Image: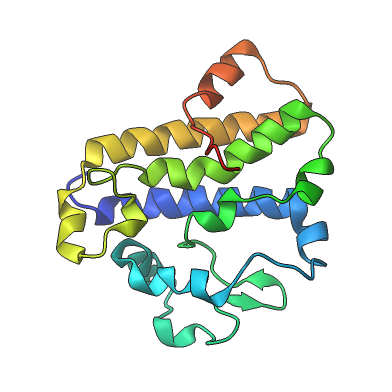
Length: 186
């Protein structure tokens, strides 16, 4: 990788996979929720963050496509395939987590929600990749570190996907998942 643009495709692919699995796990409840945590002010981050804006451009969308009241939400949920602020994946309410069969499943879901945050953490000093507001600063990001976190997140995603299919986590699966930090406030 030679520039931040080289990370866009693998980032978008991982986020699309995370979105797909999240929908599989929770769309029945989220689709009927009347107290949705999705808000237009959170959606605005997509247009403010140069990195997320690049992902928006890849989808042929622009800030003008965002609804002033509902952000990127439409009748079927978020209209973005990828390029969401990481917070959009990071929070699962108690009702969602209670649906899962056991503590391992809840842990896997919580880690799933942290994967996109993990990829971009500390991209430039303590700034998350999506918090970098100067487009020129994106080129200062360590692509090696970013690529490593992307690989860790992809490996964790594969473990989580396997856990959903089998209902089991091996010791090596747990080791892979341990690379992803859980936020203390989730």
